[in-house]
Length: 231
Image (cartoon, rainbow, N blue to C red; front, side, top):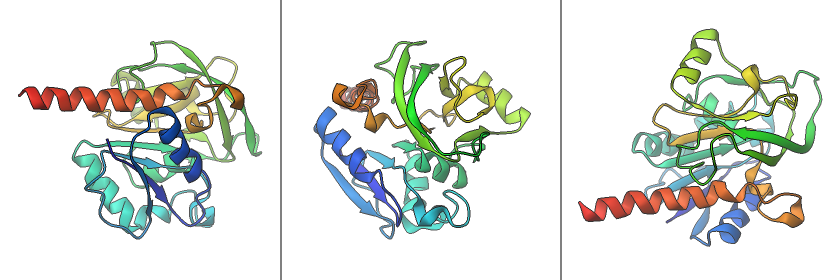
């Protein structure tokens, strides 16, 4: 299985993401620069955290216009796995691959600490190795992680089981609507989340709860390709 880690000017979690793939599932992984418009060789595209283009306009707003994001949209339409973390989540909402928007934290401060999440949907390619309702400890590091959408969109997310992660009751660090920490598209092949699972793959880092995100992707891909081979 081939992984791509996108790199924009201002990305700063790309190395963490690359190392997480190497350390958890040992699959081929490449850095892909924002000017590259061909992602055809990759099965999963990872959009890392950081400050793409310095967040000078709005988080993720400039990154959406790059060549590589046009290729990401195409890859998503083809059913490939797309995971955006922190700034990557913001980029995916700006590119309209996921609904809603990320606003300034309600306390107007950058928050950086471990956070308790609840797995709401373990039927995605990214969460299948978790149990539904499982509590996991994943770090956050963001100033604009306050998820917001209108009432109609929230109802749709709830009804379609597109809310993948919630902050556990009483642990919402940014004021996100309905305690939302991560969502998927309707097809379930695109997921965005504010917390950083790539920073939680070793106990020495404080938690290894993020490891199952990456083992889930690999097992989902293998199952999909085994089924295709049988047909």
